[in-house]
Image 1 (tube, helix red, strand yellow):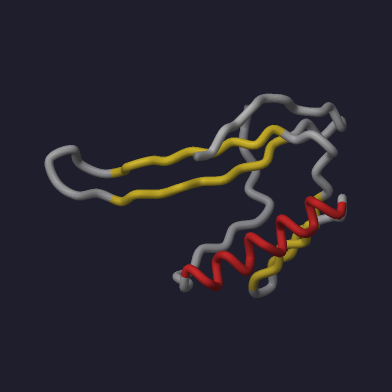
Image 2 (cartoon, one colour):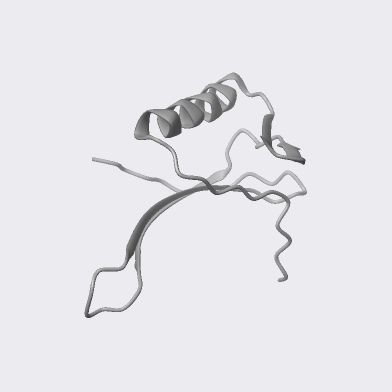
Length: 92
């Protein structure tokens, strides 16, 4: 299935700034509200369903013989037709 990027933003921030963004998203999810992403001239508003699929991924990219780039990715996924996702996650 082809992928269409609706919004993309990448910038260097402090850990506190990132936490503030994540809190805003968490508050919107908790309240059952839409999430609007804005950067420059880009903007997209999305409304996750009550039970989207939540994917967490930790990755190392780059050559195996020297340090690469580490990342933690958080992703919410759902079908556009409104079908609910599923799954279980434990973070320790």
